[in-house]
View 1 (cartoon, rainbow, N blue to C red):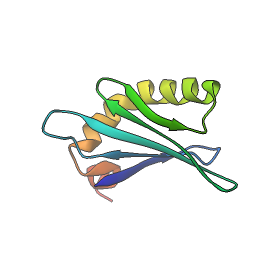
View 2: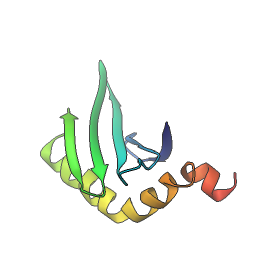
View 3: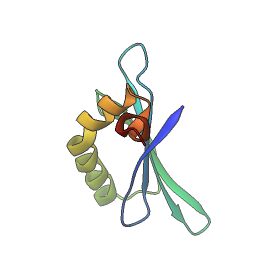
View 4: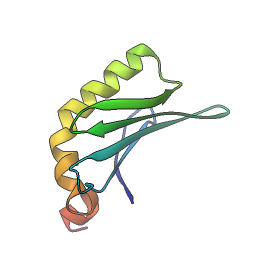
Length: 89
């Protein structure tokens, strides 16, 4: 299951999985562009990036910074059914 977390002002969506038994959480980034999507996947808590397609080096640095700034929340929400469930909405 993937839970929506945040949509950035440039249209990049961030979603995350539930926490797996090994403590890992998949974080997925996707941005609509003409002809498809740019996307990237990172696994917390190791910050292991893979399948980065379409994002520039600068984009990747920005996404990594955003992820580092939000990882504690994503890890918490991954154990509580996502932001919406954790917030009681």
